Amino acid sequence: MIAPEVPAPDEITAPWWEATGEHRLLVQTCARCSGAQHPPRALCVHCGHDALGWSGSAGLGVVDSFTVVHRAPRPELEVPYVIARVRLAEGVLLLTRLEGRDPDTWRIDDRVRVTWVDLDDGRALPVFIPAGPSPTAEPETAPEQRGS
Image (cartoon, rainbow, N blue to C red):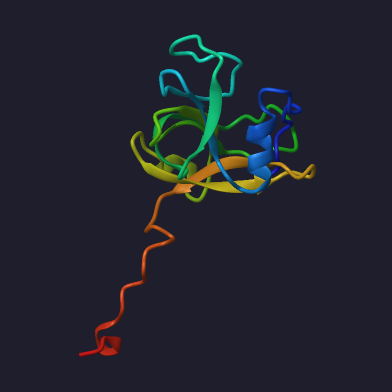
């Protein structure tokens, strides 16, 4: 995947971008109402307060909406590709790309998990792939390997 042009970090988005360089997905949260939001903003979209912080996201979600792009806006982009809104478990929506399967096989409500596309400047973009078994889950032991 050729990475798109992305905006430079500013005083509001810098913590989010810094975390992406470590392949950590953050969600902006309000200390007053506990509301979560994305993209990062100066004020809470739920209550208008400016006491905003960050919480980590597991990067799990579902496809909320998507479109398959067949005509690239720039000649160097390979088509088709999928642009989607992913609703994270924390409730926020991310506009992102879907990878890891044929574009025509994606469906609304497909479960997805985050993966990363590294940028040349040390940041990374979150993209989503089909969710599989939890990477922290213990592998199931084959019957012949189980102890008695």
